[in-house]
Amino acid sequence: MNQYDEIMEADKVYLEKVGMQDVLQQFVADTMETHPDNIYEYMMTWATRRRTPSVALPKGADVNCDVG
Image 1: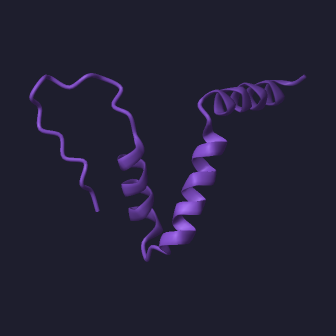
Image 2: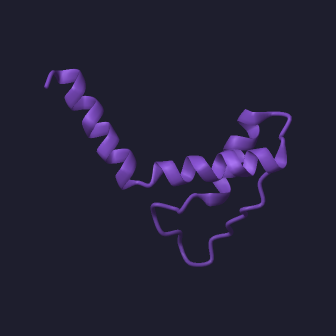
Image 3: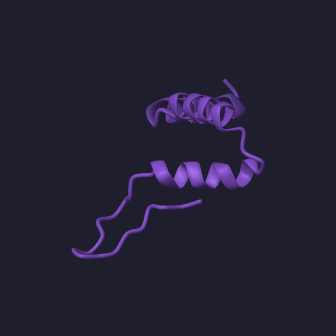
């Protein structure tokens, strides 16, 4: 196996680990239902609404998830 194949295999394992196929399938389904005019803006809004914060926010912090 050459270096390129090793990198591709490692990337494939990572994408499977984080559930990227499910994420992409849901994004495509939501996009087809919504038919946004600006796909890039929609993608940012869609991802922001679904993301899980990687760090805890201080107690009482005001978090506004209403985007778009």
